[in-house]
Picture 1 (cartoon, rainbow, N blue to C red):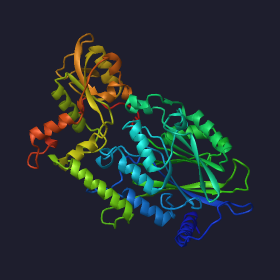
Picture 2 (cartoon, one colour):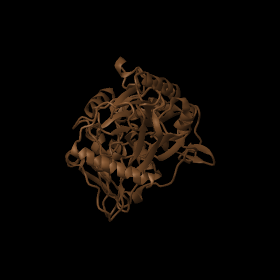
Picture 3 (cartoon, rainbow, N blue to C red):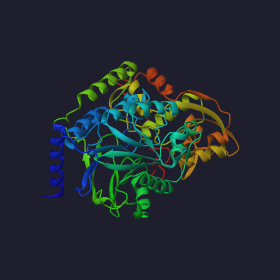
Picture 4 (tube, rainbow, N blue to C red):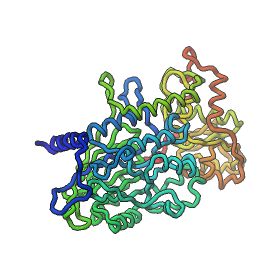
Length: 515
């Protein structure tokens, strides 16, 4: 029998055993066979709790389909419903749970927190978007999801007034699994700086070493790492420390599927938006020496929740489906107003979309230049009617506009530093000039509009230092909404032909992980 076939047989046998609720011993005994545990790992869920189907694309299964799959195929035990100490499954997340579509973002992550609880997660890494709605809302959502947030490189720890712990111990089938968390050290530059007051984000590698040792000292039989750090950054850290004997390292933040073997330790990134998860099978020998209780290399496999057109839909957990549908109805009630129409889909971070946004800001504030940070637009405008819900999905963050006076030298620095999208300036023959073609005078003053996020230093901008004391203005969506209402885009006269699709500056070179 193949290894995969053997695993399937084992999973089916386990599922039958769970259904009969056969009792298991709560503690392992000496001399027994190795114990198998199944880790179910997702990351960057970003509030995609409802199923989504777009024409010509696979359906995204959503949280209710994921829970049904986990129960039926993995024999998953949900701690909110039952005692899971003797179960074989352990659900973990790499963070960024709730900022995304309006069904989650408009309610500041309330639905995503509820769904994480229903899915039975035991821990999540602290993502760079967990604090998007402020510390009080983070605390509310963490309590609602009933799971600890972990980040060994973020101090102070939660017990001392911070937001995360370094590690936790989860018990399954007599095995003590140490779960260490990490958060990308760039988090404060990708969110509102005020949300990070009093928190220090240190280097990930020494924090991983320290917390792993602490987990072993606390009695962990095996240690796994969950992190909001890209797999390509984690891999060399893991390679330098084989002595840690890590059973599994989960990555996040880059929104990719990436499965690597690093000296026998799997370093994996499971993709984003609940379209897939990683199944990791651990084999633990409790008779082994401390820190050496893995009986075999951990096996990992990516499992997709995307369904091609024409295939039957995934079964869905009825309770969670009902809760998601209730939030969908609340979203329609609050944001269902149709404010425009587009014939063609307009992609996030594309020139047509970002040019439209920055042009409307510049027009509304009578600014010379508008600058929007890269990756501020999180979703496409789909073809068809445009609603308020659409705008909240495109611009999900609670940002406001800031108008400031900048010297030409500071304007040039902020146009070129950080890959932002612009209105009022263009790049011509390698030089940034005004839209008219005139050069930017280094000593002249220019009226510039951006967001409070960028003004506070987000994404590396230096507006706040260059123009201290600028006042915060209206919500960043407001100029777009006014323009849509005034210009009456319809099926006969849609939005997309009216947009400037020309890139105004070439995209920055290299990979950017500001997700």
